[in-house]
Amino acid sequence: MQCVNCQFENMPGSPACVRCGTSLGLATAVISIDPPRATRLQKELRRWIPFWPMYYPVRNQLASALQRATAVVARDLAIHLPAFGTWFRMIVPGWAHLHEGHTRRGRGFLGVWLAALFVAAVSYGTSIGAVAVGILFATHASSILDLLLQGGHRTLRAAAIATALSVTLALVIYWPIASTLPRYLASRQLLQTSPPFVEGDVILYNPRAFVGASPQSGDVVLYRNSEFTVPTADGARLGRPMQTRVRGEWIDRVIAGPNSHVRWDGKNFWINGVQSSVLPLGPNALAANFEMEVPSGACCIFPTTNPYLAQLSESAWRAHCIVPNSQITGKVLMRNYPFWRLWWAQ
Image (cartoon, rainbow, N blue to C red):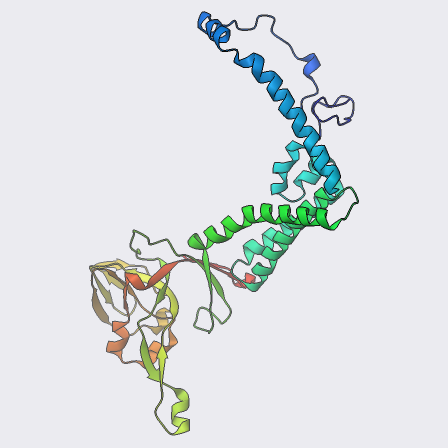
């Protein structure tokens, strides 16, 4: 059964063309013998402005010219130009192949692309994830090249045009994602061990979580510490005092928001006189029995994952528990690498 749109030979009894999707059952369709009639105003407009008698011939001439031009371009460039319904299916590698009947190659491209997409998602922010994204792009470009160079003519000009088209299509898809996603889902890889994290852990956070809003009690956040100095361990061995400046980003839980009174009795926190179940990520590093006031525009975050602060005096340690909102980088969502240490920030 030949399709009237693309002339593709379909199996008898097929309801629609497998190439372009045109219905093959128009002959059996019930056609109304009483179509709607034009109103008097419409008849007058048609009499004075004969739009439709001019539209259809022009449309047919343009469609015929486009078809002839496409055939000439395909012949001169030795390139295979798919049917119109196939072009938008190139968005997903393998989909266009399946639509044109190339089942084996379509499944191959689609399977590799989906596998790379899964690896890129679960290892986002790591070197493995970057390699997976590269495989995504390569598979997408290869699928387009394979679809356009089906005629067996591997001329340099045809390859250049197909490559330019594939890169353009891939950049239209991947570039907006690559430029937009980090605004809402960013990553950090930890460079040293600070329980409950170890060197090499990758955490995902939302850098826009607190745009126009303040952190709430219980939020696990990524924040920058105010710079301080500690004695260097190698200073005594070298015979002269040496200091190390500590500045960086750390992860811990917000205990209380601005304008709060915080008291720790050794077991529980009391926020404005009300007992709270919120604890920092490393509660064993807390001293016993202390209280403090949180000013406006800041949060109370006990830096229990910062091992350098243990070397400071108690008063200096408490000063670093008040973190201005401007030093909070974002809200931590999860630890996604390594896979066996998956952890949702709660």
